Amino acid sequence: MAYEDPAQLADLLQRLTRRLRRSQAERLSPLGLTPAQERALRLITRSDEPLRMAELADRLGIVPRSLTTVIDALEQAGLVRREVDPRNRRAILLHLTDRGAAVRDELREARRRAAEDLFAPLTDADRKTLADVLERLDAVA
Image 1 (spheres, one colour):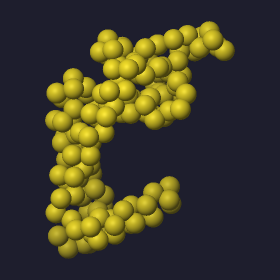
Image 2 (spheres, one colour):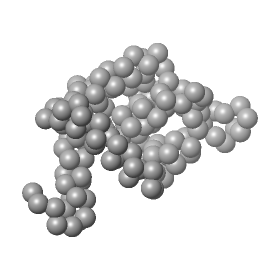
Image 3 (tube, helix red, strand yellow):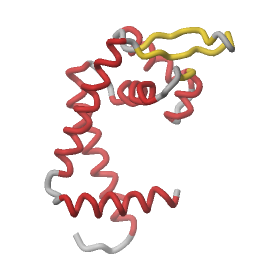
C-alpha cells in the first residue's frame, strides 16, 4: 500500500487494533472473560492499593453504572470482591482475590500470545522501530 494521506495510516492502525482485540478475545474466552472484564481486571491487578469503583470507571473511560455490570461478573467469578471504603462509606473498594491473582497470569499470557501473533512477521529491528514510532506518537498526546 502506497502512503497517500494520514487517514490511510489511521485506517490501518484501526484494522490492526481490531485484529489484536479479536485475537485477545478468542484467547480470553476459555477464561470466561469478556474484553471489558479483562481490561477492568488488568487495571485492578496493576494497582498497588484497592481501587475505588469510581476511580476504575474513570481510568476505563466509562460511567460508573456501566462498570457495575463488569464488576458484578468479576465478583461472581470469584476474581474480585467489593468492600466499603472505611474512609468514605459511600465508596466501594475493589480487591483482587487469590483466584483473581492466579487468573492475572493467564491473562498476561493470553495478551502476550495475541500480540506475538500480530507482530510475528516483524524482525526484532522492525519491532524496535515500531515501538519507537508509537512512543513518539503517544508522547505528543
